[in-house]
Image (cartoon, rainbow, N blue to C red; front, side, top):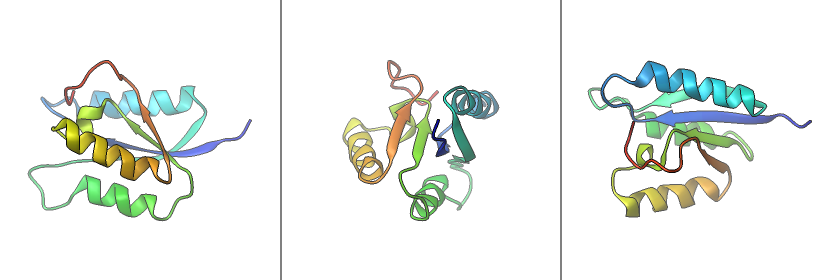
Length: 104
C-alpha cells in the first residue's frame, strides 16, 4: 500500500476547531494518509492559514488536501470552485462531508 502525504485546512466557526481537527486526523488515519498538519484560518490574526497551506503545497508533490466541506475553502461558491481548481492542478482535494456547504 502506497502512503500519501496529506495536509488539512479549515475555517472553523462557533468554536468547532478542535473537533474538526480531530475529525481530520481520524479521517487521514482511516484512509492511510500521513497527515503533516492542519492549517487553520484565524480571522483575528494577521497570519493566513490559507497562505501557509498554499506555501506548504509548493513543497509537496501530489499531496492530499483534506477539508471538512467546500465552505472551508471560501464562502462564495465561485471562489470555492476557483480554489478547488488551484489545489487540484497539482494535488488531490478530499472533502470529508461533501453534502454540507457551510463552514462547520
